Each structure stands twice: as structure tokens, then as C-alpha cells.
Image (cartoon, rainbow, N blue to C red):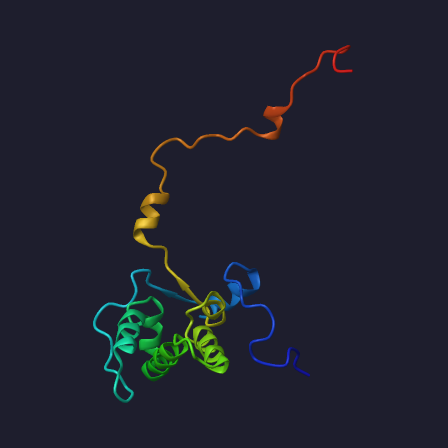
Length: 157
């Protein structure tokens, strides 16, 4: 009998675990470009778009996750998320709409848990790699051994 109760039960997959490494070899993890998706956003698939939805739409289609959405043809899902998020931002919004936003965040890979569940990871940014490259000799931190000292007999009591 299956355990857990629903598809999202249990901890999300860890890309650094040995078990997940086996699934990576089977083509499980997708690396998304850090610079995000290039090019214009797709055409808005829903009825008339509000100004706020237009801003969200353009912003979302520039994210790294948008590369995967493009491949999976998820323009409709992203548009529904934009519309729901714009509604959730209103002060008189119902709680169930806010819960839908959270669900969209996970399913579209816009949250950490969603990225893990979709088995997506973002490639390191080129700037971050350049900054991480050591330019000088790294400073050695004192070890526990360095803090020890020899106490001559007769002292210390």
C-alpha cells in the first residue's frame, strides 16, 4: 500500500543525496540558466489583461523557471497564476485565493519546495563564480590544536 496520502507528501528530493544522484543519472534534475529566459514574454492567453497582470507576466517570463515553462507549454498556468496573484494582493482578498497562490508557487517552481519537487536547480551565475574565485591566499583559521598550550608541571592549580 502506498504511503504518505498524496503526491506531495514526504520531504522534497535533495539534489545532493546519493539516492537523488541515481535519479539524476536517469535524467531527473533539470538545470535552469541563472540569467533566466531571454526574449519577449509569450502572448497573454487569457481575456483582457490588467496593468498589474502585465507587470507580473513580464517579470515571471524573465525568470530561470520560465525556460522550463516554455518547454512544457505552461503559458496558461503562468497567466492564471498572474491573475490569481494580482487578486491576492488586494486587501479584501479571500483566504482561499491566497492558498491558491501558494499552490501555484509550488507547482510552477517559484518556491524552494517547488523547485525541489520539480527537480529544477539554477546554474551558478557567472558573476557569483567570479566573486567566489579566490584572488588572494585564503586566511587560515586557528584550529583547536593552535589554541592548546603546554603547561609546565607545578603550574595551573
